Image 1 (cartoon, one colour):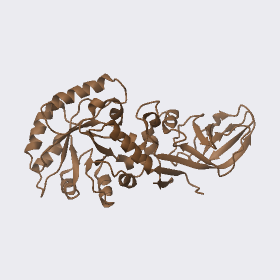
Image 2: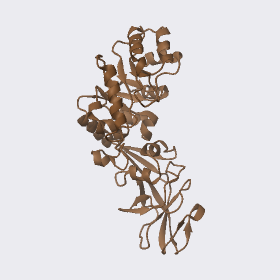
Image 3: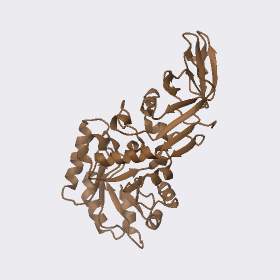
Image 4: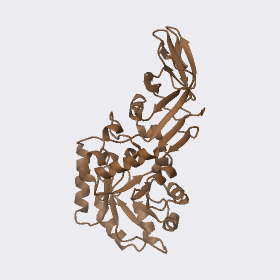
Length: 359
């Protein structure tokens, strides 16, 4: 029995979710987004399991090189592009594709001398106002890339939605209209749809969709779960009861004494805390799954432990498993209780957690 929290990663569920993406966007190729250690699930193991994806996307070059070192040969796209011209030979040597989103990147491509050509994705800012060229710059950038000897013919065009997780969002409709107008006489492949747009905006699917969160079985929509979209949770985070004790009415638990027993009850102490990535701001009442039922968090989350109210007639014992999130308990619910989003919970898991991969 492990004394550490365990993150079980269900690779079959991952493959199911990719198949679900294909069912939702049957005419699109899939650019599977694996940034931030595949959303906390393990970059290399997730890539190795997603054999049916058409390509992978990461944020930074070190993530791409880790995949290449592990023997991943599928196309890899750098979503943030390259940072300096000295990286261009590395991109070419490792067959990496790059997003171009500013003048410095374009100029570096024009001035470089490479022994080959790079596949380029041109990113247009249609309203996110984060990365991307202005719509007014599009024709000039597009023409210069086509004329650039370091760029492979066949530029791919992309943008990013800011409100796709709001069904019926006027902003998303506006972004779609801007992008469609810019590319209406272009024959290049396009990519707009993230997980939320794959589910809610089928008109945005284009030639490439970019699922990230939904590959891991999680809903991009507030107050919904992945299971409502026929997705399967990939991660199951669990730990064990390390103490069971009685408290009397009026006694408090944990730092600050913020939780107080209303009746005599049984408390369970679970070996997980914010030092493992469990959210420190999870509030009293946040559910934990133990022995086939939900029990509420009682008191503040500590670095190494949380405490739950097992109830006055509990029969739980030391060593019993406690599920923090997974198939029994949707991570979306934990995120709501902690005032955050599932992305943050997944990305905050620390090396103290033991990863186990299930086929």
